[in-house]
Image (cartoon, rainbow, N blue to C red; front, top):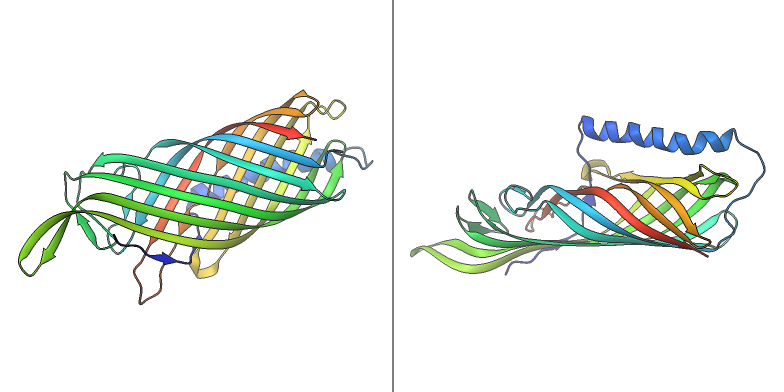
Length: 289
């Protein structure tokens, strides 16, 4: 088994798609901000102290992983497509405009696949036709703080700072080809790369009640990101609509885009790169009390 652990950062692709997502995010935030800016000036908002949310996330995977070898496509090479996942948040409002929160997102995907081409990962070579088992695990625990710059009966808009404590591991198991002095040999191996990366990010979160008096129907969303210079950048976004079913219970549905992660090791060490995005619809329950 080969195992490497290095610090890194997260990134999104520098193409037209991120610019379109940013534009859509700006439009979504505008639908929350403008009604509050030109709405009734009286301050107000939720009286609840705790907000606990749990989402089922039907996440679609795209991107590549690599380690001292081939860029391995998680779709065509490893067979990853849509995977079920969970994401949750606990938010405690310790003051009228101050929040402490923690996000928890465990992603654990595995797949069996027969290779259609030769790949190399963490120094191990897997030939065409090899049956492999692969897994990609991402645990993200993100504590943070939010300050509401706008807080009205019609909703709120806050700025936030959180630290993503990312623990990522990618492994491939199968029969690998070994080139030695006595010729070519084959043996069963598990090649693994991993990284732990604490990443600070900033962003905005907003909620607007379409029915301010009853506060029964609302739209909610966030946009978070950070630029890490030569290492890349990070972005995640979520948008949803919620309906209050009971005094403390809401049903929510929407769409979430995760991050694309890029990690590079030091010059004297083995390399482990992850460039994977998870995105897809979310469905959940929210409790306010």
